[in-house]
Image 1 (cartoon, rainbow, N blue to C red):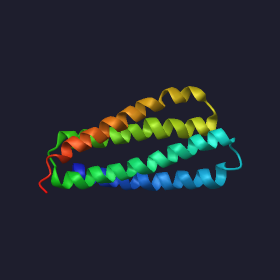
Image 2 (cartoon, rainbow, N blue to C red; image 1 turned 60 degrees about the vertical axis):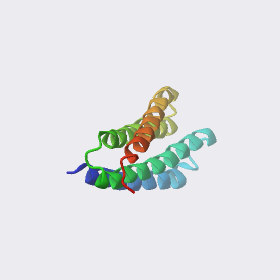
Image 3 (cartoon, rainbow, N blue to C red; image 1 turned 180 degrees about the horizontal axis):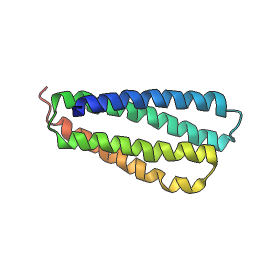
Image 4 (spheres, one colour; image 1 turned 60 degrees about the horizontal axis):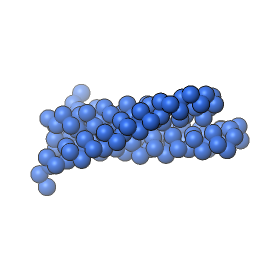
Length: 127
């Protein structure tokens, strides 16, 4: 599977999962979680959607920049950031295990690097 196709599929699947988890939080967890944990869950869901769209952007750019290592790294770091940031917050909110919050900044750092690499790769576009 080409890099473009992989990141387009990954972005679309990630967006679908984000919508499902967001709906689960809004409907099943709203009455079960304390307000502070529900807010954490909503943060996970919100950033999950943003970075699913980021993966789609990586896939679309990869059509035009198939040999870009910066773009490929951007996509992998967006995936990693989603697992570490949103994943840790989803689990923290559901289980109340606060130690998982220590993992969250690693995901945020991965996302920052991913967006910077995306910007770097986009310089190669012939517009």
